[in-house]
Image 1: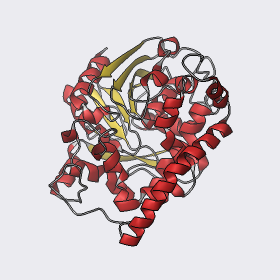
Image 2 (image 1 turned 180 degrees about the vertical axis):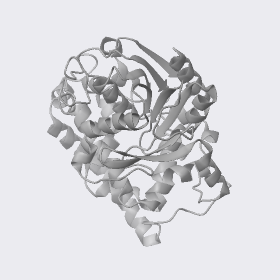
Image 3 (image 1 turned 90 degrees about the horizontal axis):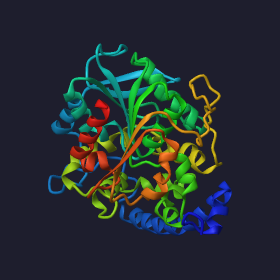
Image 4 (image 1 turned 180 degrees about the horizontal axis):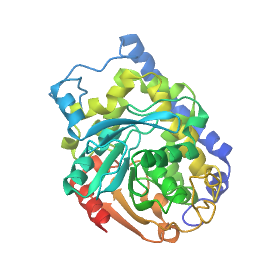
Length: 392
């Protein structure tokens, strides 16, 4: 072993195709089981439901439909805006009525969500940051999610394209610098944004997301098993077919119902919250494919393809890196990492071991009794840490 890893796995780590082969073997077993379940649901009429289930007040994890409560929550957390950025429309929620200009005396805080969520997953943070009065908080729907545009194709979800989206939105909002907060997929993207434009990012907060280089270097068999769903998502068509079952029930199962992976604090997400995170999947075509494209064209190449990976956008005008984007150099951005201790998808050691060598000023804080969905699960503790970090 070297750094706790099996020798054969270290060799395997150097080849994208070997990853794919091993992943295919593992996920084909899972996929077969899901496909059998799909056939059963198809025969019983449960598969391919294109509408959200009826409202239910008996369970916090039951999916709801549009009602006065969901309408009020949709409007509660800020102004809904769309900006033409990087050739598409990006939807975001801003905690004031300004559109294309900065708020005098306030600092921009930009929040990037993960899979399979949207801007609404940061509702608790929008409210808490707004109440401080010193910040212009904006929660973004990443391209392919929520109410943002859903372009198709591999080139639409590369690292360079996604980073350009974020920096373009900051420019559209009228700011030259900003605080960045990201969770899950949005957390990996936040690492890339900070590396691409460190002089623009005042502070960085990562919530349960791996550092791209460390995830690659520290990868273990245990993490391989935990993230086997990533390899399943790489297959064309099949994930879309299976995940559409029963009105996209995988969302409530992953976020709430599943005892091992769902939120521990079940009151943090109720039926109306689930509706607001699921409704775009029913309303817009190709929604699920666009969401899965992040794994196919961004996460997998970004974290597995080569080491040390040069950022794909390092030669673009958006980057002001002095080192041409090499992950081996230190990131000079104040960074806070918040980690839900009960994360069943990511191993903290794999994701963060050695982060002090790659980030010049970093603090890692663990939130006990908290799942992968930390900003919702233990939102009060997360808000407290974020506000303290923003104030510096």
